[in-house]
Image (cartoon, rainbow, N blue to C red; front, side):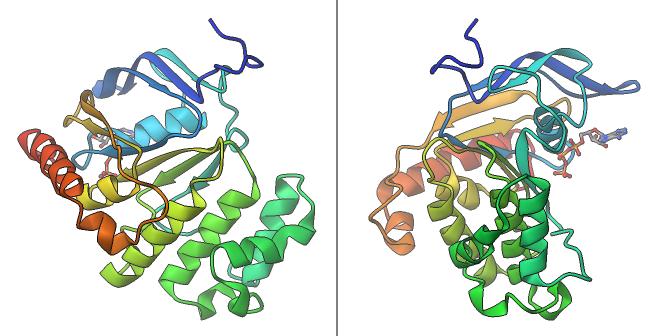
Length: 256
Ligand SMILES: Nc1ncnc2c1ncn2[C@@H]1O[C@H](COP(=O)(O)OP(=O)(O)OP(=O)(O)O)[C@@H](O)[C@H]1O
């Protein structure tokens, strides 16, 4: 077994994991190894255990059976991964910049990085506004900047764009696609959308309805740089991947 220090340590190792809530088997058994640098998208029906798997990887819950390791060691809740949820969960009494500053402080990072983070997510011009004075898409950008502030090697995103309108959602997908290509950063992104999965993922995993098990695990070999989103979506391979993943999702009864 590789140690946490060795170069070949997986970012995430899920081994023979099953998770129950009382009598309900929510997930598994599941085996999943995610190498560093991968952008893995989890797709599946409502209630198939996607959030459960994310919470296990974040260390917020312990698996009923099996083991979860991040970077070769058990995950530490709130410390091992940056997290983004469907609702941005910002501090309304703080400004946009104040929310980022707090995240940097909590992560033990220097607070002079606020401007650089705001620039990265395109929010420099609203830094002094309260979070309730900006749009839903901008709020979700703050949540992403806050997760990036922690500078963890692992980023876990649970349907972060589900509550946004289609246009805002597309813009954020495009931005996340470029932000997430930072070397060595591993991301797990949960969605119901097959298109979002193909657009964002370097790998897509489809889960069956409860109990969630892996029914498709597909690498996505599409260019990640040097191509416009429209050209990417126009590639024949893009359409083929959409069709293959869509078929797996539909035949498992998932709501895509
Ligand atoms: N704390 C809990 N107690 C009991 N059952 C739970 C609990 N959390 C989740 N479940 C159940 O476990 C199953 C998996 O839930 P989970 O939230 O992981 O699914 P999901 O795929 O993320 O769903 P969605 O896409 O709707 O968010 C569901 O049937 C859910 O009702």
